[in-house]
Image (cartoon, rainbow, N blue to C red):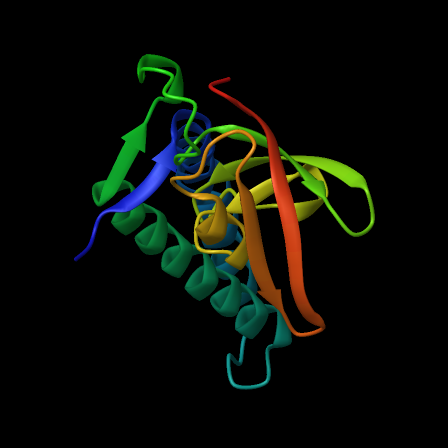
Length: 158
């Protein structure tokens, strides 16, 4: 299996979710299943089926997180030399040449990406266009509505 790039914060968030799933959610679901079993006929017991569905989801998510963490390549951007180039984990400010708008993104792993918090997936078109570029470089990002030109304003290791 290929390595999954992840920031230190992203790995920590997954570890916290895993602990919660194992120590809180799993026991709660097991108790709900046991309680629903006591209500008799399992074929027509909606509570039982709902609890089993929750259990299936919980166990699936535990396996998914364990798999990701076991294949994680945790990158601590603060320990890498600042080259001025955009790499995984850097915080980059770009300027849209057409709209004259400036926006700052942090390039993170797929699990950490959240556009509302300006966390951009390494696999997104914008991030792929920015990787390897430096301040003052102009990058062209292809979008469904056409190409957009951005100028890199700053690159920081935060």
